[in-house]
Amino acid sequence: MLRNFQKFLFYLIVFLIPINAKKFLFLFKTPFTIPLSLNAAFLYVLDILIVTFLLLNISRFKTFFSFPKIFYLFLIIVFISGFFAPNFLIFIYSFFHLLLFALFGGAVVNLIAQKEISLEKIFLLLGISSFLESIIGILQFKNQASIGLKFLGESILGPDTQGVARVSTPFGNFLRVYGTMPHANILATFLVVGFLSFVYLFFKKQKAYYLIPLTFIFYGLFLTFSRSGMVIFLLGTLAVVFLGIIKNFRKNVLIFLGTLVLILFTLYLIFGYLLFARFYISTKEPSFTYRVDYNLIGWNLIKKYPLLGVGLGNQILASLKNHFYQDQKLYSSWQWQPVHNIYLLIASETGIIGLVLFCLFLVLVIQKSLVIIKNNFFKNNLNVLDLYFPLLILILILAVGIVDHFPWDLESGALLFFLFLGIVKGKTKCLSNQQS
Image (tube, rainbow, N blue to C red; front, side, top):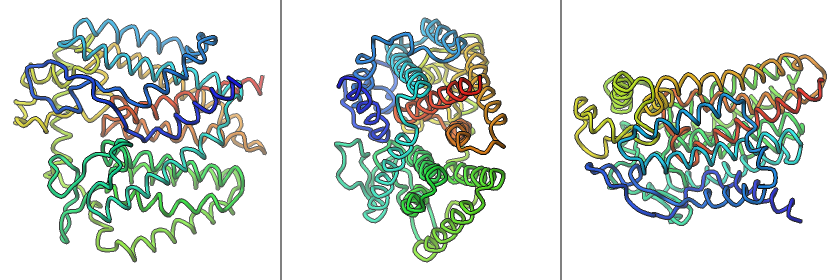
């Protein structure tokens, strides 16, 4: 009975990843008026569920540490860097969340390797969750405002809400939909994950009805107007087509591509006037210039604090104290955003030592999984799908990290990242054991 409840709790956490519901605890004391969402402690519903899940599995505590040892050396460096943080309380709060997600990811490794949880159920739940998020996003676009789901973490979205992401077109300014997430870009990434989740189930189960939700998910993705989301969607689609052709799933590929063409055609009929609204990049538009400024700020921090950085969660505060935002002519508090590159962000907060260890950890996980895929790719079985799709999603999340920060420092983004780290590592271990 207890084991069944533990599984239920795990699947519930997976399903609720996009839910941003939280309780404000207190504001960190800093000399700057940093935006509330970046300068306050919150208790998230997901935090409570993850802590409960880990406590229920405390008898298997050793299995929480299932990542390569170099990752835990990275955590030690992260902890040491905290003693150089301008605000130690911010560091403790950030380190707690990193440790929480790391333990959860480690638990996932063991649960996947021991076949105690089903990868198909994980993908199904992610797919359903993304489908519901896309419906919320479509309704937000229809209203051009939030739809009253604040209890689920929906941001306050309105025509005059400051800081809300919008897209400018010749036909006016339109809201970029958020779902229940804190920003359109993280919703876009989650919808791509949900899209690929249903594609995985279609390939694995050979059932065409798994393609039905793709229309709504893609509409939701489009309405985020997220360039990074569309780029990883395109990369993911190319990877699926490549897999289908090489693995002789040509019929599946044709059905998938036919569905995609139909989706694009209906999208053009409904939103034709907006279809190319974000299909260009200007070096003068804010989304580009701010990213350049934020990355320069991160680089300046790395040069000033190269070895151990400024402590987890302290990048914004340390940058303000060193006048790096001001040097980039970013004087308003809403402009004080994190470095929009997780690798520069990790280096600025944990130093070059931390970044090197983190990258080595990623290389170890990905390299071993690629070897397993290579050894199984041309065999006549479907097991390779169980590693190919999770690895593809993990790589896409890491790719988004080149132009955004949420896979590292936002609740839903970091949880999604560590979930797929755990799945990839667990499936690599599982398939490795089958071969030996």
